[in-house]
Length: 118
Image 1 (spheres, helix red, strand yellow):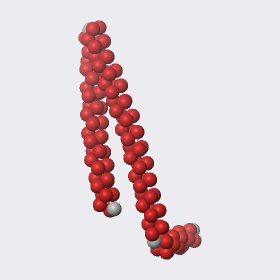
Image 2 (cartoon, one colour; image 1 turned 90 degrees about the vertical axis):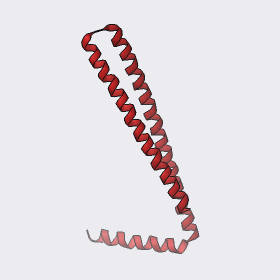
Image 3 (cartoon, rainbow, N blue to C red; image 1 turned 135 degrees about the vertical axis):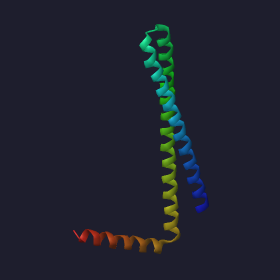
Image 4 (spheres, one colour; image 1 turned 30 degrees about the vertical axis):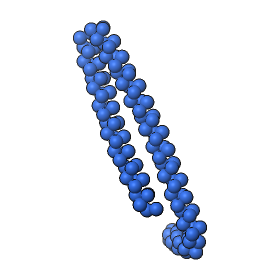
């Protein structure tokens, strides 16, 4: 089970790195297009401005949709991870009830001592 969890963590890490790389690339492309748009407005060429504005709007829409998709994936990955961890904890408690009671009592004593110090 620990091996499966480790593999899942490595998979999440590689997805996070890929997502970060893609985000950096998207933001670079968007900023580059905006810079082109700003420099194009200096010479006031109407046709050039319309073309660059359309490209900037398209890249902005693409970046926004990618960010929304990444946010959804991150939410679902986090939800799945928490659910998996809660299931593992539940199985442990059912498999080792007395150990779980001992751990709970020890934590209760420590918390009680910390609160009692105030």
